Image (cartoon, rainbow, N blue to C red; front, side, top):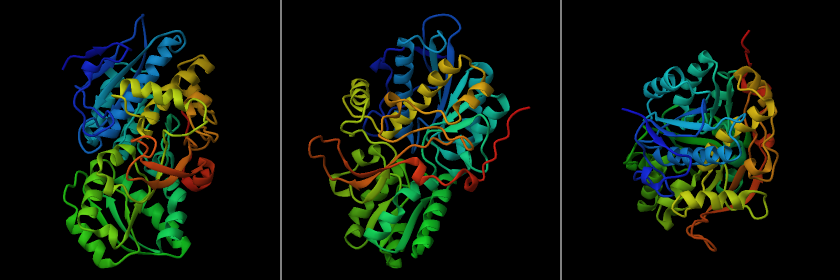
Length: 420
């Protein structure tokens, strides 16, 4: 299919009906933000724009598009304008790898972003390391990406699953109880998140009553919920995401399970809460970024900028992931005055994000040793409806720095091997 070209200014006609609320969208694959000028810098992005993660993936792309528009308005990267080339991984590892190779080998991208799906992100990392392309994993959480399978060229913006679990486990244990039952997506992300949660639970003195492994794209959770209810836990921990989270929480409420068992989890997303009926917006969770942060520099402007291109809706953590991933390339390349991947990877170690990109109160930096962004966890409780703003669906009780939730580099299993 021939490339479709889009200019840096957002064109609403390019947005096709999305998979959920808050501006999620599907697009013909591939598509480009076209920049003026010769020999532009090219950022490739692979994300699942169709399927169970279409909503968060679409919002990551929207955030990256905003970053490209802003960096071009300020002179681009090293005086060259920037293009964003996006491909749909379709939530399939083979497709994701094929699209990454196409972007690198045919389209000659300088940098790579992606994927929401942890398994795809890990597979793409193999390709980018082989091709010596600087790669930022925007939204794939499984620990191994910046753990035992870490690579010199790969950095990650979103939290690890261990960071997610560490941010909220003690709160869930103290407020809800010590017997936990899990509903877990059956792939890399779910497995490592479950391991992190159960490790924390054991340290706290709790027990696991069971773990229901569910395929991605599950629509009927009734069998899993019946098993969970019969196990009689204190807490039902939902680790599913995307449309699976929406379907699961709806059915939890339909079955009245929330009246018998506390329902909560680790990572929650505004895309999911917004798509739920008010009665299903329940539980204690962690957000990886939240849009309502009074007095924090830069947040109000970012919210206003996203509203302009998102049908008036506020940004989600996924918008911030995409925005930060793309903006990181411009920040480090303009500082180091090079596009050489090895030099930039070295420059990114312990690189601290400025206020207008980090958009949160704590220090945010790419940690030397494992290349994980030390970003905060926003811990709190879902709200059935917003009080001052209808989109304020989460009450933030605590913002925990990444340095407190992340294990030490020595505990991650990461050993960076640099090219000769």
